[in-house]
Amino acid sequence: MKSQNSFSRNLGVVLSVLVLGLFLFRPLVAAQAPAKHKQAQKPTKQKTAPEPVWDLVISGGMVVTMDAPHRILENGIVAVQGDLIVAVEPPTPAANDKYTHAAKQLIDAKGKLVLPGFINGHTHVPMTLFRGLKDDVTLEEWLTKFIFPAEAKNVNEEFVRWGTRLAAAEQIRGGITSFADMYYFEDAIAEETKAAGMRGVLGETILDFPAPDNKNNEAMLEYTEKFLKRWQGDPLIHAAVAPHSMYTCSQATLQDSAALARKYKAPILIHVAETKKELNDSREKNGNTPVQYLDKLGILGPDVLAAHCIWVDETDRKILAQRQVGCVHNPSSNMMLASGVAPVIEERSAGIAVGLGTDKWTWRRSCRRSQKSTRERWARKLSSRWPPSRARGPSIWKRKLALSKWARKPTLFCLALMPPMLRRCTTSMRNWLMR
Ligand SMILES: [Zn+2]
Image (cartoon, rainbow, N blue to C red; front, top):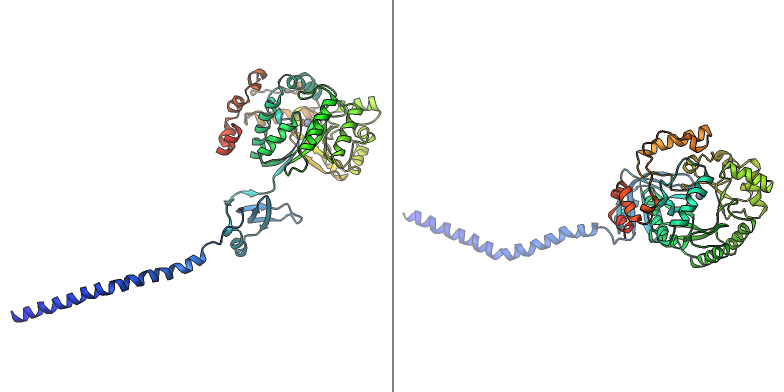
């Protein structure tokens, strides 16, 4: 009994000591624990990313640099600061440390191409709202019987703004970041282009009959001069002068337009040698080709962007190269109107810079399924050299739109005809488009 009591007493003492020890040492253990924790955190803190430096870094994509050696970087890194690309580098550990880990905004471009934006060298953006108006006619019929009357009846500043917004959304979606445009109310087009964050070479159109915004030559030149003055020095908008063509402008109009452009060092945008009729008429009226006629008037120069240049012979190509005129090839438009095929290979061999353009937007049907059959019909038009009206094929997509129904309500037009496009737009783009 005694020994049992003694054992219990000793056990009680041992437990008491242990409990007391734990109690006494607890603060010490607790005090040491944060120290250990701090020690464990210290190296982690050192390893955290440095202060973000770069506004935007895109990594993980295949970067098509388009630099002199045409480098293509797999998993390349592109760093942007402000509005400048400051670095394009392969994915080395050093580049990752320097850029990827120091980005304010990081885009993972895995599985994507990263490349400079496309440039649409010739277009008329508000004409998106004339989409589906008329097919299977020549350029002359298309202009005089359909487009010019439709423009006279419907085009105002609001029309132009909506058309530009829609065209900007479609172009951005297609990877186009810059475009050269010829239309009316070009000041409004410039405002919408800038709002979309796109770069534009925008030419106010001048011709010898009343336009939707200006009713005579004098008013057109006055408007254009104000437009040139307003946008001088803008980082995104390059205001230009756009005499429509040699068949819609007199000699005086062409020369006045060129003089105005050169006074402000602005580009000149013009349609040149688009159809065989233009070539034949020029030969008959002026005794030479459209290119030679324009050269004789002193219009051609390195500040000229000439759309089409389809009906150009060897002498014309030499002149275009000597004057450093830029040519724009518009294959879809040329197919739709059966205008012909530009001799792009010969033009490039002659030393002419040739770009690509969409031209009119009216050929693009809203339904993607129609595109294959549409292009087949266009190819028939070109290969047969038939008049466009004879090359009509079976077209189940020949949906005619009553102009009066949608021209007044472009918002409904967008919603009714473009739901797939709108669905694919980002929320912000949709909000911007529908604002
Ligand atoms: Zn055009």
